[in-house]
Amino acid sequence: MNSNYYAVIMAGGIGSRFWPVSTQKFPKQFHDMMGTGQSLIQRTFERINELVPTNNILIATNTAYEKLVLQQLPQLNNKQLLLEPTMRNTAPCILYAALKIYNQDPNAVMLVAPSDHWIKDESEFLRNIKTSFEACANNDILMTLGIQPDHPNTGYGYIQFEKNSSEIKKVKNFTEKPNLEVAKEFLNSGDYLWNAGIFVWSAKSIINAFKKHLPEMVDVLDDGKNVYNTDFEDDFINSNYKKCENISIDFGIMERANNVHVLPVDFGWNDLGTWGSLYGKLKKDENENAVVGANVIFRDSKGNMVRTDSGKRVVIQGLEDFIVVEKKDVILICPRKDDQYIKQIMAEAKESFGKKYV
Image 1: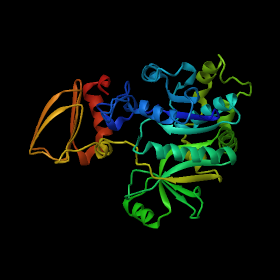
Image 2: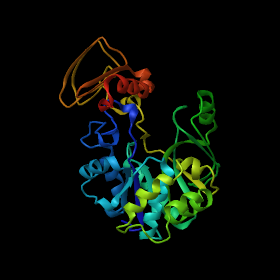
Image 3: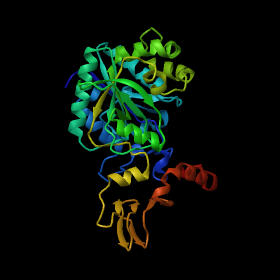
Image 4: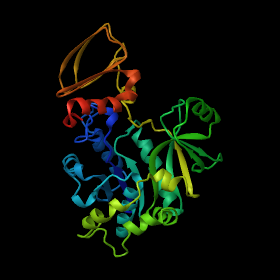
């Protein structure tokens, strides 16, 4: 294992589209969404730990989730947690991580990855990350992994690359979630990839990119006195982090920099953004019904997804293409085609039932 390899796992989101299982107090990355016996963050950590030493893996999360992270990843210590005192999107969090890592190891190359994605071929994923690490150790480039699209998805951002024979491609531009017609054009052109939000770069290269494109943020988070990895780091972050601009790494850096490259990859990826996307990855019976946790009798029913607390007995009669989710004292029953409304449903539930249920 290379001691210059580092990783930052982003675990601060709420996952509101997975309500009622995912709540503000206990978001989806800490749940066993797939019924595998591991939460999403545990699986992500183990996958990355195959390549990156345990001590070099940092978790970026909200202060509210400190205990949850340490309960689920007991191999970590408090110094490996980047606790955001307030939510400021991904750019400030990544700069914080890069400054901390650079302070410890000026030759570091770092992976930034979400905590809640599903990856089928983990060995291919690790091969792709190793390729990216090696490229970024030797070149001043910012890399992202681009997923080979297999349908015109309108829920993802797209990356256009320059066609050439090299494995790593130069990025032409980024496009936010397109409409269906544009997504079809992108798919047919053959030079667009899905933006997975998985990045690799040297700590030095990303800090230089921030100095060029978001210098005010560097002024806020880099005190020049090596506060990182000392007893003063927490107080410094608590005082300064809130002063950072609320901006994503995509808008703040990736869309402005001219040294951005992409590695086209195909390791079976899903961002697990909705119940429908989870349904797509679960095992189905002969009637396309999928189950997590429950003990279900299906009668004249097909295309459903049922998720309950472990061992709950459920009987479904005459239901087609529905999501049925139970969490303690809340039950959600929703057509699969309407899963994009769950964020609004959650807001209504908060209004009617009270915030302790969301």
